[in-house]
Amino acid sequence: MTLLSETDRPTTGRPTPGRLRVILMLEVYEGAQDRFLDAYELLRYQVSAVPGHVSDQLCQSIDDPSRWLITSEWESAEPFLAWVDSPAHREMVKPMHGCVRDTRSLRYTVLRETRGTTATDTAAAPLRPGEHHPGVPGVPRPGPDGVVRHGLSFTVRPGTEAKAAELLAGYRSPQARVDDTTRLLRTSLFIRGNRVVRCVEVAGDLVAALRHVARQPEVRAVEEAINPYLEEDRDLDDPLSARDFFQRAALPAVHHHAGLKTGPVQRHAYLYPVRPGAGGFLADLLATEDEHAVADPGSPLVRSTVHRREDLVVRLVDLLADPAQDPATALGVAGPGAAAVLGKLAGPADRSPDGLRRLLAECAMTPVTDRSAAED
Image (cartoon, rainbow, N blue to C red):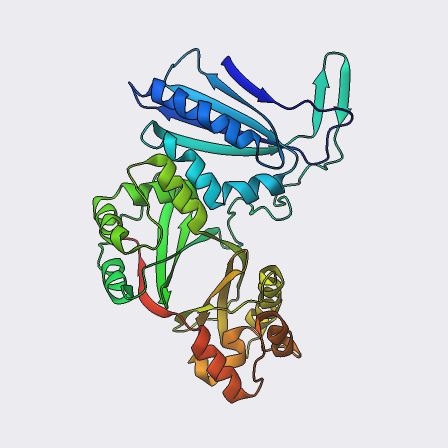
């Protein structure tokens, strides 16, 4: 790479524990280089004023002039993540829209550093396989059954819910086979109010599967048709706009439990009310309860996946019985004291069977479509 420019703040002493290095790889459209450089020139000084930012560099490939690299260093992951998910970030990067064909972002914790003859180690500990930085969603990993589960959630304009649901239910399933190692398995889509949740199940590489789906003409037509109904604008022809949308919409699966029970199951999704800041505690409570329920031969719970982004918590369950027959299990609070804890995390609740049925009805999402991918 050829180093073209650098914005840097002087640092002194031992490196701050947990410093973050962000690497953004970009491919710039032919003829858009000058506009891209002008956009970066404006962006670099705006970013340098963001709390937690340390430095950044813009580089160009010496092998392929259309490929560029922006690296930045941050005091820790937290200020970067707060900024990159903010409306301020989306406004800052708008001048780059239309210049960039493709992007890929990588994030690394700085562990060791050598400058000349001086070597320093940070206080950050290396992560082990399966671990992730606190507060940072981990890379989606297969569950014990080899299936990767992931969710997307977004909102549509109030009053357009019925039309949006009709569009989202009306596409032809894409081919199941993505490549030699990856297959699409199932997509379940639900809506409550104006909140849409799409849960996908993949055997193999989740990113490859999502790219495969996005390239299918029938899926692309539906995504374009629903654009006017979204609360937040997006442009799927603009890689930066599309990336920002899917980053904001990501609803990772943080817990999954499955038992060995067999029989006809019904799939349901529940969107929980959450007190501010209690999303992680609620997700853990539901996961603990579900772990016991799927192992209990007398429980109707067969499988459960808890999806969470901050205080947005959605639970996808497969049940052997009507949820109203066992509302505590359907809600994930069948254990002793679990309903009381739920009340502290989600708000006051009547813990009687009728009270739990009312809460169940308030949390239940309406199914839009649930389908397997088309076989080859």
